Image (cartoon, rainbow, N blue to C red; front, side, top):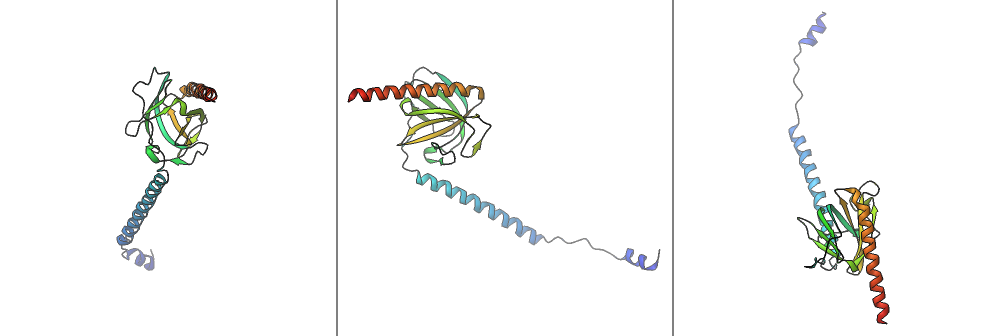
Length: 195
């Protein structure tokens, strides 16, 4: 080897020094940013709930609900203003996703949600059902979501459910539409008879 190369090879090298203060500052800054974004999302959720505060209390199931027509075990994915799949309703616990047990009787639809507020949709309030692919915050394959439209507090609400057995959805759509049509026909004929 030539003397110049030996001199270069023999020169001591120190390991690069890590700037721990700079790294810690970046990590803390990132954590503060994430917490701030989470706080903003939480405030938005509370604000939406305040705006929807005029929504009346949800009906509860009657003591004598009648003989079950259908029962379903699955998930409740949320509720929106009818026809507006991104306008989530958070008031009265309708924004809380949860497991759900649905029972359809001649009286209406009972929704039991462990860890969240249960509610009941009277047969007179049912406006129909359909298969859909999405509701605020949840998108599934085409027909993967059972959407029940019902009336409450002067407005219509779409509530999204997914059965553990998706093959049950068509039977639910048919039964809910039949019950809502029967109920509206009865209600309309009673109104006509009163005139």
